[in-house]
Image (cartoon, rainbow, N blue to C red; front, side, top):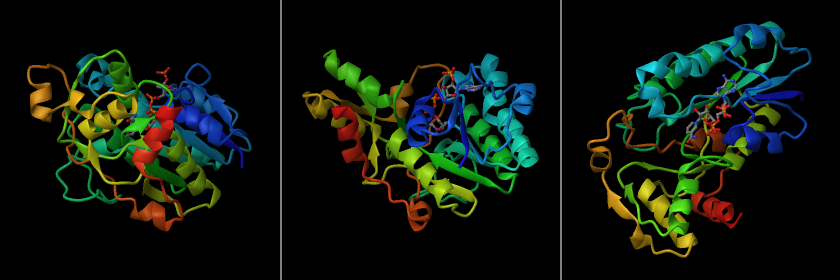
Length: 279
Ligand SMILES: NC(=O)c1ccc[n+]([C@@H]2O[C@H](COP(=O)([O-])OP(=O)(O)OC[C@H]3O[C@@H](n4cnc5c(N)ncnc54)[C@H](OP(=O)(O)O)[C@@H]3O)[C@@H](O)[C@H]2O)c1
């Protein structure tokens, strides 16, 4: 199995490097996926699968009109460049998506086939990227949430605040599950190795859905602070008066039935978080 990882410098990209040690790993400097000429010119000979971990992930930054072109270049157009190369050279494409393609109003876990209804510029771009990836037959479109790996993420931020003696306010009405980048990479490896039927799959850690405040409390406890040092606020309270922030879906819980039926059983997020923090 000859795999190429693009966007290999991000949280998922780094986890994929470890999960696919034999893969060619290309960070942005090695291959800018928004450059159609560079994607076309790359030597795809003999490549079986491309794992696309490149994305614009700064959700609030995406709302700034000056960033729109850059957001769509990587989250939409680049997916098209990779899909074109996949068609031409016969490789399969793994592309990553987000629950931000939905508005969060669905009751219960979000199935793969729910119609997109994004609230934000980032969510719109991911939904449009999904269309590009799904346009080719040989694709695995993997939706995930709340990714935690090497790099900037909510857990790292909370751990830093806990260690510095800060007591933050954290939203208590957005509900979801963490996804350890390592678990996500393992799930992707499962899809590719087992040659699971092409299509869309949700992959997150499992376990009881929780709020960001619950996650923060778990981080604080693991760091020897009190869970009560986290003040619980609503999303509306948290973002009041903060201009330029993206609307967030309140329900981020992805239905894991399909990936479980495909034979991959993600572990619980609390245990995974503990292991991550224990380092
Ligand atoms: N993070 C989350 O909570 C979350 C939740 C749901 C879904 N997702 C999806 O999961 C995927 C992986 O996310 P992540 O958390 O690993 O994101 P990340 O840590 O922000 O990594 C994204 C990577 O993409 C690279 N990149 C950006 N533009 C590029 C370009 N033109 N060419 C090549 N590489 C480029 C970035 O490089 P630079 O470092 O040079 O900018 C960065 O290394 C994304 O598709 C994201 O939308 C993430």
